[in-house]
Amino acid sequence: MFFFLLNLALADLGSICTTVPKAMHNSLWDTSTISYIGCAAQLFFLMFFIGAEFYLLTIMCYDRYVSICKPLHYGTLLGSKACAHMAAAAWASAFLYALMHTANTFFLPLCHGNVLGQFFCEIPHILKLSCSKSQLREVGLVAVSACLVFGCFVFIVFSYVQIFRAVLRIPSEQGRHKAFSTCLPHLAVVTLFISTGFFAYLKPPSISSPSLDLAVTVLYSVVPPVLNPLIY
Image (cartoon, rainbow, N blue to C red; front, top):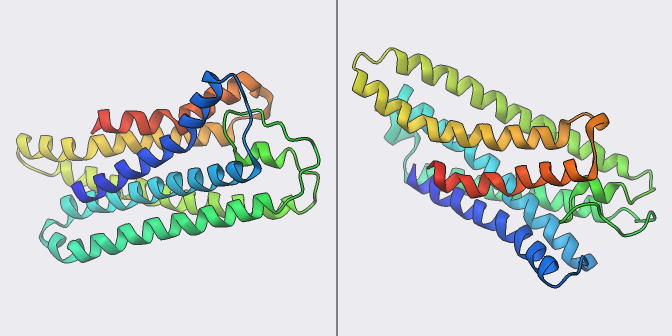
């Protein structure tokens, strides 16, 4: 558990350091500019750390499932090598995920100006600046990513259904309390991360406004990494 928490902390720290320092610099120096290369790098690292965090949260859910539902097999299923391989797979998958999105987004020609309505470089706002039909490829890539996210979400929900069924069968109240205290922080982090992300990208266009978009973006990109250490 603590090995995965270390990886989650690194992902949270990277996510915060990708957006907040540049926003603070712009605020302190009363500017709002970022270079083209800097924008691409910011988008890449943000997608990399957010993707890694989501994959790590999914792996941590599997860790909880095995520890509670199959405790006698824990040493076999989640030994040190297995944990290292799963963490490496999460970081590698996040790297490929970020690389594909960044390359596909910045391949598009930007012909509607160069002003983003956001405090950092975000894919939806960059796509608004493009008038190329090639942006359909990015929309398709986003759809594939949504399917992967939905698959992980279903896995998390199914795992927690099995976990709670197993916990409720524990005869001692102390055992149930220990199991719940292990799961509830992770469940709180997952709920916060997924709910803010879903609201940011799936909210109806009718309620969209610059101020609301800014608030929602802060909600999913800054709030979860800040609150995760407090929750754990």
